[in-house]
Amino acid sequence: DPEATVLASGDLRSRVVSLVSKMERSGFPVDEIVEMVVHAEAYCEEHRDLVSSMGPLERGHAVFVLLLLAHWHISDEPCTMANWHQTFFAEYCQLKDLEAAAMKFLALRGFKLRVDDFALSALRVRLCFR
Image (cartoon, rainbow, N blue to C red; front, side, top):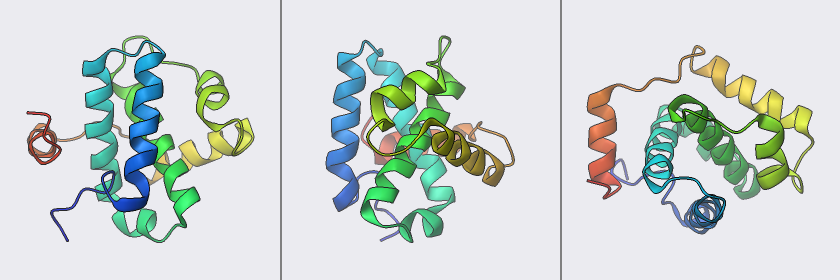
């Protein structure tokens, strides 16, 4: 379904909700969390085939990497990768593996994190944020 969002798909929905809840408890502003989710969805849609080909655990962690990249793009005071790793990835992988995954997604995006404003507005509507 082309209208279905990647982040709201069955196996990811509960993991994204859990991460968002954890970010809110950690003091992330709600408006920043919303923008992170919208940007991460845009990144996922751009690489839907790659993300869809992953197993559930890997797909969940790939989405967390994309949320980290979105956080770096929109936040005035972004968390370090080491902090993000400790908070969200410590049980899944080593810091060097997180760094490699982030670099892979950055390279796939041509090292550009900006998303077209029109695309972001459309995603906000689809994700029911506006």
